[in-house]
Amino acid sequence: MNYNVENLPIAIIGAGPIGLSAAVNLLDAGLTPIVFESGDCAGSNIAKWGHVRMFSPWSYNMDPKAVSLLKKKGWVEPVSTEFPTGSELLERYILPLASHEKIAPHLHLNTRVNNVSRQYHDILRNNGRESTPFVIRVSDVEGERDILVQAVIDASGTYQTPNWLGAHGIPAIGELTASQSISYGVPDILGASNKQYAGKSVLVIGGGHSAFNALQDLVKLSEQTDGMHILWGIRGSSVDNIVRSPKNDELQERRSLEVHIQTLLEEGKIEVFTDIAIEKINCENGKLIVNSHSYQLPPVDQIIAATGFRPDLQLLSELRTSIDPATQSPVQLGPLIDPNLHSCGSVPEHGSAELSHPEIGLYIAGIKSYGRAPTFLLRTGYKQIKSITSALASQEYKDFAVINSSLSRNDCALNQSCLE
Ligand SMILES: Cc1cc2nc3c(=O)[nH]c(=O)nc-3n(C[C@H](O)[C@H](O)[C@H](O)COP(=O)(O)OP(=O)(O)OC[C@H]3O[C@@H](n4cnc5c(N)ncnc54)[C@H](O)[C@@H]3O)c2cc1C
Image (cartoon, rainbow, N blue to C red; front, top):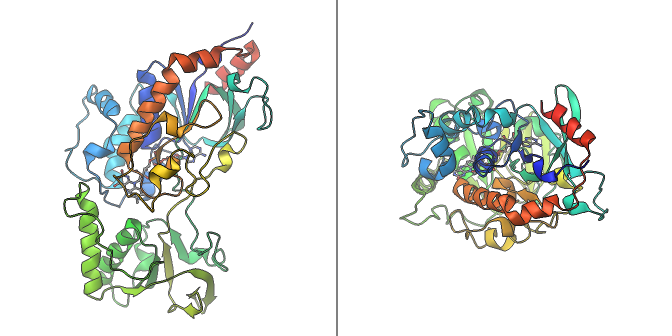
């Protein structure tokens, strides 16, 4: 006797804000999610940059469907116009949502997805492919196992795969050897990582808002401790465009940060190096020496690589994805988010059509869907999820998943034991 693929759950990879939004929306549409989170709590990537104040207000940062769900349980809604830090987003929104009685039973923490494929189909095999379940290979404390699902939403983010310092997109020569003194992302300079930077010479690399955040905190730290030297290396040839958001920017915190950095530069608190293209990093007498083109920057104790992030596409390598060769986003989304043309907030509306792949039933959502483009906003991600949910709940998709589906009773029993 055969069972319908349609009866299987929909896998969500990652319990960040977008993964949780997917769980809420799928449940609301009568579908069953199964959420895998590699960290020990939901939002574990955000926990790593909890000290950073977001530049979008609460009203942008929460999924309206999740808000309705939380409100039914006496949750206190944050003031919509205020700007949370990452930690506040976690404590006041993500964790309450993850522990909500409707969501928690579907959430598997400390469970990493290692691979996704189609049952008995490698990437080459066509026969009945579309109506065959996806296999999710997960690992947790008990080891590895496979779980069958009818569709996959990959919302695993990009924070765990930062870009290299090296100018060619690959590690600079010596970058891996120097890794003890390099931090990728936005370290908690005024908090947990204080000792790493106090009294030190620190080079920040990168021209975006993460670099601004690091520079702002380093200057604050230098006002509390002696002997600090703050250096800033950028790829561009000038720092003329620090204040790049319009005066009436709807993301006011973003503009305030830009204005603040401009002031710090005018006050001479940061030494700027332009036209930086890092080729080599040497460690000499406990200092790092960065070689860019044919010259060397002054020796430093620490480097902060605020050079952005890239998606880990290895996870999906056995599936038929269609990825834009430059942005590494789904191919149809590429031109809409091209950072040469768009900034946060100017990305056009998009949904399941732009996020689809030749592998029917697979979606990459959230910040991972933007590939290497740094322009993602949560507000856009929630719209993506709304559209993906409609597509997965549609009769067209249901018909598709049911036709020729051939799950055996054994397969279903296997899945049941995995989900318990
Ligand atoms: C410093 C910083 C500031 C930002 N500020 C703003 C802002 O002001 N406004 C805004 O709208 N956006 C902002 N963003 C961008 C974006 O909204 C956030 O990155 C947001 O966390 C993206 O949500 P997500 O759910 O797509 O991914 P994430 O929050 O990164 O969640 C992905 C989850 O997947 C898990 N995971 C990863 N790999 C696996 C795996 N193989 N198996 C299982 N689980 C896995 C991770 O542990 C994580 O919990 C900011 C980003 C950064 C880095």
